[in-house]
Image 1 (cartoon, helix red, strand yellow):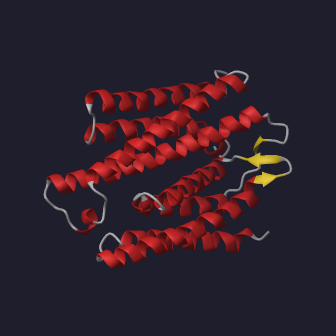
Image 2 (cartoon, rainbow, N blue to C red):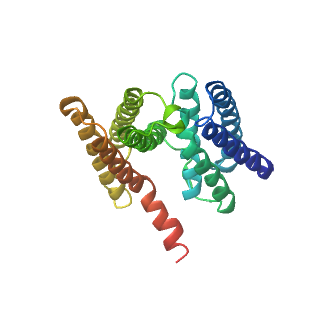
Length: 271
């Protein structure tokens, strides 16, 4: 399969979708609705093409490839799949303004730096596959929550300084944005909990040398998000406090998921 035309079309779909979703922030009510529907529709087309590209690149008879840029592309695809499907019923499509261009970038990097390493083979136990899927979904949801937290902080800043311009006017009410944020964090935290439990159940040694840092950082991220949820429901944390804890948890989780792969595959190999 010639992946280049599919990749270019997927990248174009993502960039057009992001542009349409961005444009709706400044149009009239009718224009915003048209841009929203077109943006989501073209974004879903990009997700479908991205899925075909991923299948051709990472799936083979020998197993599933999880090189650094393969993993980044797969995470971006998962985030956008969740985002576009959620956008059909919830006002979360604005997150695509930041995520869609990043997803397009991961496709370019995946094409330029193909990997040959295999993580999941045909002999990989079902339990380990379940652990990988839960980890991927947890990371994707918490990444979406981080973008939502930044958008919420910008909205709160504009409202506090009495600048409810076109950008802010196009967003859902602050309370709705905040409720969506904690829904994402709550579900992401639940999936991360399942991922950690399944890891201890199905991996031979979660604290082996090659997994120790990933396990420890994942547990730290779990504790950060758990503390944030506790603070939300017991202390009413919101605003800057929610932003700081969300971004802190995501940074730790990102280091857990991508830190070692970056060092091993991009620094040590090319060093």
